[in-house]
Image (cartoon, rainbow, N blue to C red):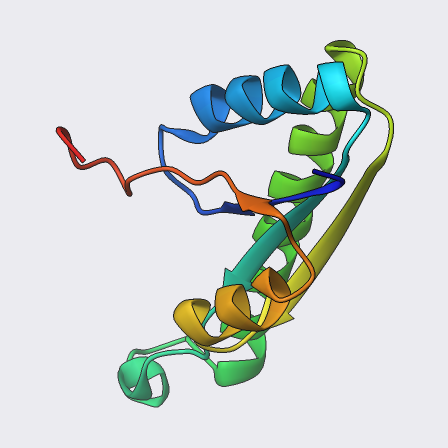
Length: 116
């Protein structure tokens, strides 16, 4: 196994997901690719006072960048330095499938759902 894909969302499971990915990558020197997908703004954005599509895109993109930087720093703290990150605008399921083609393993959270 040489490549681990780690899709991240703005949920509480990211710390555990990163911990598991780091543990798996440590013994085999695998590369980790962090992936965050942000979806296009909701169609109601133009109706909400003060909200614009451009503002929402910028906000979501910036939040995604921050998430990826923090995840990269967390992995570096665990001694994992072979990390790349990808920020994509689109449908999460399609982007994960596209990036999974190059991965040997996917480590992901459950979107906060228990028991999965």
